Amino acid sequence: MQRKELGIAVIGAGRIGTLRARLSAKHPAVKFLAIADLDPARAAALAKTTGADFHTGNNFEAIERPEVNAVFVSTPEDLHAAPVKHALELGKAVMVEKPIALTLADADDILETLRKTGGDLRIGYSRRFKECFLRAKEQMIQGRLGRVVGGTARVYNSRAQAFSILKRSAHATPVVDVLTYYVDLMCWFLEGNPPVEVIARGQHGIFKEAGYDAHDVTWGIITLADGAVINLGVSYALPAKYPTLGQSDRVELLGSQGTMIIDDDHLDHLIYSEKGIPHAYVPDHGVEMAFLGSNTAGDWACGDFWGPLGNETRAWLDHLVTGAPTVHATPQQARVTLETTIAIERAAATGKTIRLPLET
Image 1 (cartoon, rainbow, N blue to C red):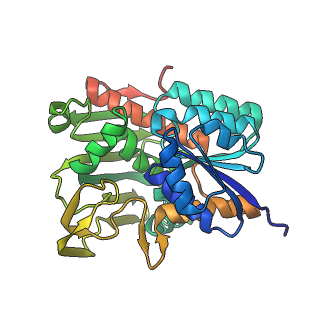
Image 2 (cartoon, rainbow, N blue to C red):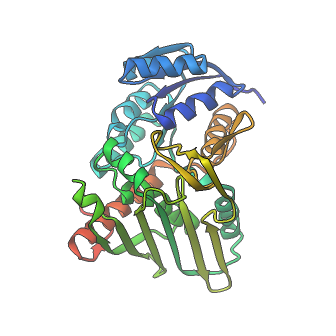
Image 3 (spheres, rainbow, N blue to C red):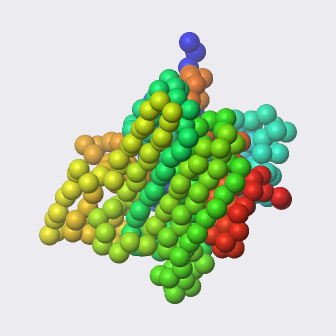
């Protein structure tokens, strides 16, 4: 098998872009690495850390480099569309962070560019690459639950991280930015059985008082095409010192011939330290007690990065090199997920039942 050499551009030098760049720099097939950020100093700093070959404050300049054949778009959520479309138009493979966009109009614009170019685009729903969820997907493939009639997924985190996300992008609410992972997981587990109706309720308080139009708690009931009912919930309003460093979650699936429960709260790995434990997502915030393993992306340990985002990044780079199949979310799947999260927010805001697909 002839293995392809890679030239990678990482667009966005924030926390996730930094991880993508550092992991790319360690991959044996990557022979060229470019870093771009609208803040040139941040791009230069990450380039120095990773030994990148090129850095710039112009996103398009990095994408256009002739050595580059694949692009990570790790910009803020509302800035995904332009670099994704530009890279696709130049014939370069793209992975963009979730969600694909914040609006259906931007998502459809990306999908239209993809249709015209016949390009290669995947969306970074890294929860798919956590071992417990990969194992769960295999059980679904094997049909061990029979017909799934219902399920639930809920995720909790502290308000410290929620405020960090909302300051970056006020429209990246806990539903759009976090519950999106679990909409994606459920749609992936129940592939071919799309959401058709959403009922949701939310409670305003902490975030509203801080000036953000986001619910402290949101619960949604999703009906799928075959009548299965899925309950999804998110709260990123727990006290700032709550021990979760990213996501504490639980997923359940109920079938006609089996049941599957995935307890991912991380209560089994607790650390307390009077020296304090740094928070990966909020650099100026530390806790004395933490659930190890709750960092959404994963953790640095013994010189390498382990966990869902590490698995996802390496799997995409391997896919580009060898052509091996991959379970990364497709653009079509990502649009369904975006539409469903928008419906959850709309239902919570209005108290109305929302039918899918939405009218655009």
